[in-house]
Image (cartoon, rainbow, N blue to C red; front, side):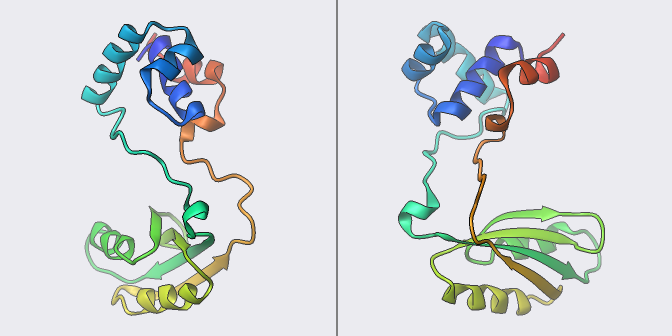
Length: 161
């Protein structure tokens, strides 16, 4: 990746679109160059999809719960992670070090669904217990990691020398 690729990726994160025309307007990079680079970034696995992001709050998934999941299992953690990730409402699953085995984020349509979520976790054989935190307000909930960096920081850290 070079500075132009990083500039395009940062613009995608900031604008919330991969539209070549919008990216050209934001970056000043010609549309033909943007098309070429987007194709290369897809081929390299950097860009993984063309999905439109949806604001979960706007469609009624406005309850966020963060759970610490403590488990007992033999073998690798991947199968347990798959079981946890399959629980309806789970949007993020992280395998962690320390006392907690997994940290999970769930987006739910209402507070009544929290009880169902906990019950679903308790029904999983490897799950010993959960510790749930009900999110009152999301101060920052970035969907794209690049949003939290300046272009200069990204270029310094990621651009090929």
